[in-house]
Length: 306
Image (cartoon, rainbow, N blue to C red; front, top):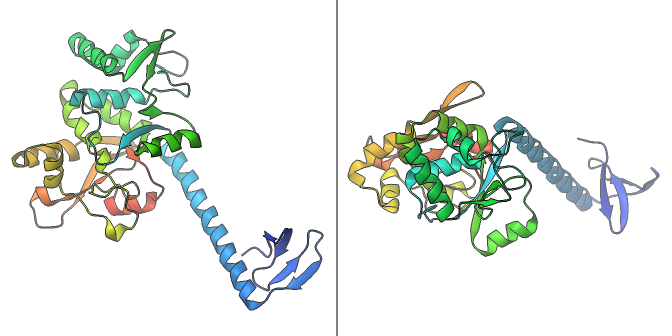
């Protein structure tokens, strides 16, 4: 415990010893000794400050550990990009990781992305790429301005978000999550064009993921873990209109994708067996290194055992 902490008492800035209750002025002179009640308030204030500092340190460490990210905007409990082909959702999420701070795509740190190097990056056939590019332009996911390819700023962003932007999203009942660049790119690089549709379910599930605990659930905004109403694989099938008879197939699509982070091979999702071996009853967790909206990394990592 620090010997003195700085705090405002009335309109005066003072230094207080939370242990003894001694209050000193700016010049180091003792002004008075706090009562027991005041001492307790000071200790409570000190503990709150200490807790905030510890949380801030954890967040900063996780930002460094998890790496750079892109902001993705979505609606709670609503299917994302319903107008797009499922395979193109995966490709769009991957492309978004090449967004720069000015809103347009970069092939690398020095080269602005063109249609030609986008084609190379996506590793699609000519026909598949033409279909994808047309889908993106027609649905206003991508647009061209001054020979640069911009991505829809209502869906994706990079860098610090202004409070006015966050307020605008809130008014429209939209929420934001972090898409982690390394995780999303590695998942895409390990996939094939044929598997892009199945990989899209990992992103389609996003609006049903709890913002703090990364549990697939019916109440994604709930912050009390005991009140989170988990969604089973079978219930998710019903939600997105996927045949429950094929839940074992969807299970493979969701839980088989792997990627490497810090030299370690890990999965994009984990499950918890709640009611026997019926896969349709499994609870599901998203690896926060793919996407995560909250700041309770330790809870998520423990819950999903990532």
